[in-house]
Length: 276
Image 1 (spheres, one colour):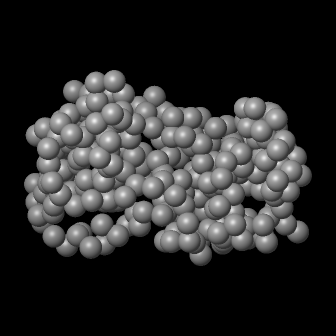
Image 2 (cartoon, one colour):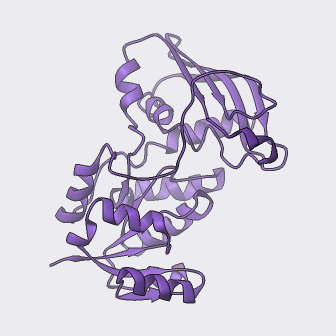
């Protein structure tokens, strides 16, 4: 018998994900929602969902739902993931799982209560690649620069380059959470309007033996740096590193351990350092 799948947003990103992985073969497209109920209704009819709701809370309250895809913006994603888990629903979501310091207490709660095993965190970054390639080295350079258009001068910095674009670095640090870790900030630039990190230059020292020099640059015109470019399209497609695990998560209908909690320790660590 197929499980009932719902999406916490009537958006194209969720539909593309369902289509790319043929999830409708494994699940019934049961419900979608939107804060505008008319939009939810149109979306439901277009993509053949059985039900639709005019609020996220109403959808989460439906007891016939088994799985929920949550691709909401990072600012509200954790709040609704938390509500889903409290309703014993399984959640498929993307990085970053949390977005601010205030969510750490609730995040720690779901880890300790083992509700985290009901979260499947999509890996379209290759979380463990950086750790696997560098864990035998004592001196490591980690450098990321976002490629921006020439019109960036007229844009606001809406992406935090540390907390939103460095899951591989967070995964690396999480492997050493029982070690002595020190972070020394060398340079930091924050956007004056959004308060997001625009440029970060810092050293991570682990047990006095491993040193990681990290430079993160969002290509703001005032930064004036040249380096490698990464493309943050925020798309989820067939390049998922853990696609086989996704199918197991859905079909076996069991709790899943895919290190969904790896963000907690480094997220907490960086907030402590940056807010000193």
